[in-house]
Image 1: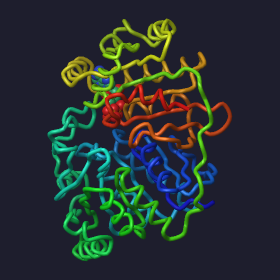
Image 2: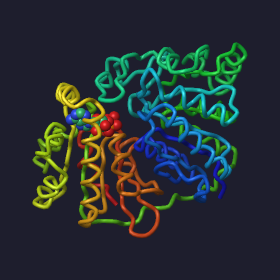
Image 3: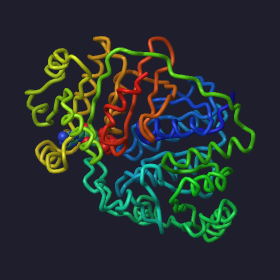
Image 4: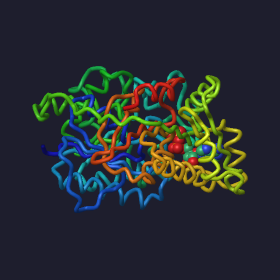
Length: 422
Ligand code: ADP
């Protein structure tokens, strides 16, 4: 089996999200957590998704890791590169979406690429280049308060423009064109290329729009998008007769206790944690200030955990005012590092005590936990909610991981995850 598609995701939950889309679209997909060594053998798969933790890394580091990951996939045969970022276009005025896309264009030889963070199933749509989260502009959604990448502008052309090199032109394929299908999109992209627009935002409101876009960009060396485009691209490979087909492999049966960890402070996760608490389930609330002065430690949390009879949730999840207070006292990065390190240490200790199933809420948080657990290659299983599949490490003694992007999942997400745990 030859690798056809090489994807590079800027966080771990985004990678599992894209991998689940590609698998749903019929591609044999393997997830690689963390940048592979250049000489690491490629997995037998039609799509590989490399999960980086590069969303908030220094620009040069994000660029270097993304390009190296693509080169590894290309060496295994990948013909097309997919740069996956969040459906809320999480980034800062300095990057990393623009700089990584420019570097991947150079590495793949692409003269033009598209940007399409739409994920209609989760309410993310793009119209006239403006990104919506359900009925709100991105800048009016909970994303304006994100602890690391606050998004205060919904105009994707403007947001991307500030991240690209001086003089880079950003074009738009509007929905009126997209709805006319793949041919119309291709013509619009060619016209924009002729006028010098190497970077093109593409509107999309529905899965049908993404299917048409998937067809239109089947031959582009590089696409950049959230996970929504994955289905459309997989369908293009299928239509071209490039996929083996058949049933995807099932996850192994793992069983035992499941540990729930949350470092996401998104609106959706706050609601999910509140629902878990209101349902009377076991919850330990972490406070970065208490972690900083040593009042709370991974050891003290483990003592509490050992006293719980059923599944427990350990959460640093807080509403925006509490997050701001912690950041004012500790600095944004220190507050984040304290939470991430503590949750990762707890996961390692719990695994030592026999736990083999973990649910982690938060993109950065998932990166920290999966890395600490040493999870490298994952098979992708059934979804708990759109964009959140159960995964299992390949090889002996598998560990199951469900990595949830902060904004994903319904209010009963944690209970839903327990119900479908492998
Ligand atoms: P999401 O997927 O919702 O963006 P992430 O895990 O990517 O979640 O980002 C949330 C960040 O906020 C993490 O770096 C986490 O460590 C940090 N964080 C979590 N809880 C708190 C808190 N109470 N105060 C400050 N920062 C926090």
